[in-house]
Amino acid sequence: MKDWIVAPGAPLSGRIRVPGDKSVSHRAIMLASLANGVSRIDGFLEGEDTRATAAVFQRLGVKIESPSAQSRIVHGVGLQGLRGSVDALDCGNAGTGMRLLAGVLAGQAFDSTLVGDASLSKRPMRRVIDPLSKMGARIDSEEGGLPPLRIHGGQALTGIDYTLPVASAQVKSALLLAGLYAEGETIVREPHPTRDYTERMLSAFGWPIEFEPGFARVRGGADGRHALRATDVSVPADFSSAAFFLVAASVIPGSDLLLEAVGMNPRRTGLLQALRLMGADIEELNVRKAGGEAVADLRVRFAPLRGIDVPEGIVPDMIDEFPALFIAAACAEGVTRVRGAAELRVKESDRLATMSAGLRQLGIRVDETPDGADIHPGPLQPAADGSTRIDSHGDHRIAMSFAIAAQRAEAMFVVGDIANVATSFPGFDSLARDVGFGLRDA
Ligand code: S3P
Image (cartoon, rainbow, N blue to C red):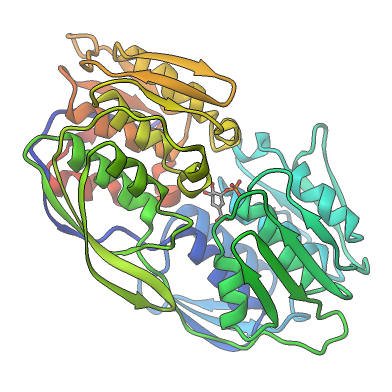
C-alpha cells in the first residue's frame, strides 16, 4: 500500500496549471466516440478514471490515438457503430464512468457488463438503474443495486420526463445519453442545478438539446434522424484539483500562488464562494472563454479564515470540495457548519466519516450529523513522535486534503492508501512539492 509522509513545508509560491477537468474529459471521450468523424481532445486528464473510460471505448471498437500526453484523437464510430465486448468493461474507480456508460450501453444492440474496483463496487447504482428501466432498459445488478451491472442490449428505449430525487449530474447525464437512443424526448428536471457539461457538449456536437439550470430536454435519435458531429474539445484545468491549492495557500501563512486557466463553470465553483465567505483572498484574473467554457487564472494569498454556516444552496456546486473545505474549517477561527450534504456518504468513501475520523486524529473536534458536520477549529496535533497514520480509505480527495492539513500541523504524520490520487490528479505530489509542500513517499 502506498503512503505519504507529510510535514510542514514552506509558504506556497509559484505559478502552476493543474491537470484537465475529469468531468469534461470523460464526456469528451464518450461523445467523440459516438460522433461521426474524427475529434481531437486537448487538455485531456491523464488520470486513471478518464483513461479507464477511454479504454472502455477502445474495447467497444473505437480507435483512440494519443499523439502526445493530454491529447487524444478519437475516430468516432457514430451512434450505432459500437461493437459489443465479451469481456467485462472496467470503469476502475470512476462513478462518472460507470453511470454515464450505463446510459450509453442501455441503448445498444449488444449486452455489456460494467465492473469497477473495490470502492466503485460499493457505490449505489439504483439511481441510474431505476430511471433507465423506466425508459425500457434491462439492467441487472448485485444485491442492493451494486455493481457489476449487466446491461441487456436490444431493448427499445422510450423517452421519459424524470425529476431527479437527488441532485446528480451523473444520473442526469446517464438519462440524456440513453435519451439519444430513445424514441421521443427525454426530459430531466433537477431539485438543484448540477454541472451541465453533458448538455453543453451535446449541443457542441450538434445534437438537438434545450437546457437551462435545473432542466434539460433532449431529442431522441432512435429513428436515425440525428447524429453527433465530430468536434474538437479543449478541456479546462479542473477546478476540483485547483481547490486543494486554493485551500492550502489560504491557510499557510505567507503563501501567494497563481493557478492558471482554471475551469470556472458556476456549477463547480461553490468552494470559491464558501472560501470568500470565510475571508479568503482569491482574485480572478484574465477571465476568458476557452473551448466554450469560462476559465480564469486564480491568485490566492494567505488570509485568516473564519468559520461559516455553509449555505445549503451551494452544496451541489461544491460537492467534490468538502474534504478540502473541512481542512479550511479546521484552520479557521470559529465553528463551520455543513448541512444538506448527505451525498458525501456515497462518494469514493463516506467522506463525512473519513474526514471526521482523520481530523479527530489530529485533535480536532468534529460533530458528525447524518447530512453534515460541525467542525471546531484548533491546532492540528498529530502524535509528536510521527506515529499518526490517517487512512484515506483509498479516496483521492481525502488523501490530498490531509496533505494540506499537514502543512499546518505541529508534527509530521502519515497519510495512508494514497495510490488513488492518480485517478484524478496524477502528479499532485511533485506539483505540491514544487510550490512548497512538505510531502514524500513513505
Ligand atoms: C460528476 C458528478 C458528481 C461529482 C463527480 C463527477 C460528473 O457526482 O461528485 O465527481 O462528472 O457528472 P454526482 O452526480 O454523484 O453528484
